[in-house]
Length: 122
Image (cartoon, rainbow, N blue to C red; front, side):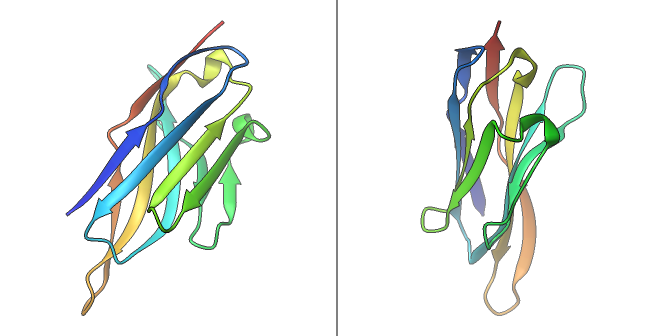
C-alpha cells in the first residue's frame, strides 16, 4: 500500500509564492517519474511539471521560468516551488508518482495525490 500526502496549498496574492510538497510512503522499492498536474474549474487536468528519476525536468510553457520542480529521493518527496503566481494559476494541484513495488517480481503503479487547492487573488 502506498500513500501520497500533499501539502502547501493556500491563498496568495498575485506575484506571490507557494511551495507544494508531496510525500510518498508505504511499500516503495523505487520511485520513477514524479510530477504535478493541475485542474481549474471547468477545465481538463493538465501537466504542470515532471521530473524523472535522474532529475530531468519538463514544464508546461505557461509556467516555465516561474515554477521549479525538485525531488528528494531519501524522503520520497517531490516539491513544486511556484513564484510570480498569477490568477490563472488558480487550480487544484495534484501530484502524480510512478512507484515500483515488490522485490521478486517488481511492478509499477501510478498514484495520484488527493489534491491541494491553490488560489491566486488579483
